[in-house]
Length: 561
Image (cartoon, rainbow, N blue to C red; front, top):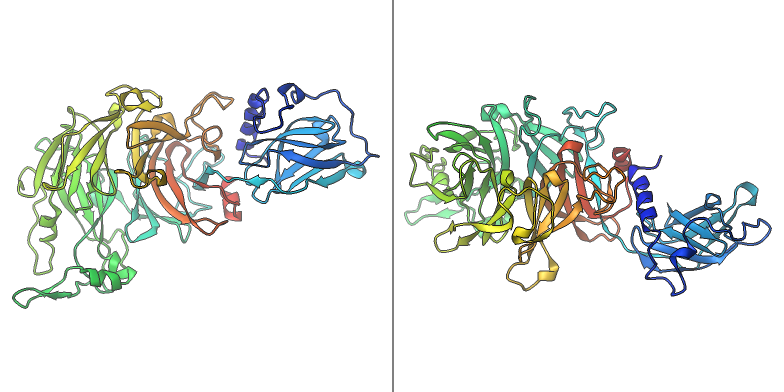
């Protein structure tokens, strides 16, 4: 059974038939290949030859011309594979075939069969087509059942379903095989909100680890990790690493301890930061919770110790700076607040501990109302650059982004300014600065660009443009461009949303994508580390990927079908 992507590729083929093959010989014209030409039919008594092909290299969708003899004039009598994959034949003449390179034609052998049954003849082209791999969209897990539903079901990548609420994702700092997801109530208000999930990329499983009852059943919004400054033994107990000036033991994670600590020891330093959107007229509503690992298991679960770390009003997100400060937003008055985490860590029971006051209104020594974004009721999320030198403030419900620069001396972000999009201008347009338009931008992730090596900023910022069903990116120069999805023109239904995998712009589609992170993984073909994106595709109820195309495993075939 052919996939939807195959049939949409046929649409693209027919849209391309009038184009010249720039990489082919000068004598080739569009008229040579459009339609079934009246040429010599296939002669079963004569040999079939396949003598050459042009061009000799390219990727999926590359237009290709084969030369030889006795091909006939009926495409239905031809079967062509390139690298073992079926190729789409656009047109045939007795001495030439116009076709398109299929996805995954890695090995490059070109094999043609002409005729049927006893009259069929099979030939192979001299040499191999040099297949150039591309970044493509795929599916990691999740699917809609025959009724178009995706009930919340934990399990293996082949059986797990759900993923149908807006959400954001974050890797464990010390274990990138563990990807955590927190879900919002959008867009399914009135239905039970789902808890925090752990996607184990090594074990290929999805598990709900914490229910939202831990957070008083309030609306969860974002997830991040705080790494504390302490050293631990394998059991999660504080481990002595030195003495202070008075001879008392100290428990701080020194460089020497960090180099020799086991993965389990390091994992005790991790704490989840979960932001919640709760209203309080006196500005004392819980905004961010901190969650420790369960002392009995070393895992994050419903038995994990947890406490409120920040209270204010209607938080849309909470984020850790590389220097350790916590920044969190307030929808009510469109604010960004700062929390000095050093003051919080000082209350942990290393030496007996002290009480922690989470209310920003009352604890003015630890909290600071730092930034007024624009006005009240601004739904803001924040993405801090890996170096910490600046951050983007993504204003979800006003469809634009701001940049705020970081002052290394004061350890504070400065007044933000518009970097992309226009306040309240919903749309879909690539461009520079305010000429770019977006619609409900959501989670973003910084990706190092080798082309910028040696530049002041070496990162592009990729983000989900949820209502445009696209993954887009913002360059350091303020240029917004579309990376994947978002194309209506290349699809027969004329819609930007869909569920197709494949080539990034013309074939693949998303449907209200919201979560986006990036990492590297081992390329199955080259064995080298290569970029991979993970995308929470909300209305398709799937976790999707973007990475260099590879041969599909049996498990991936099950998910796709």
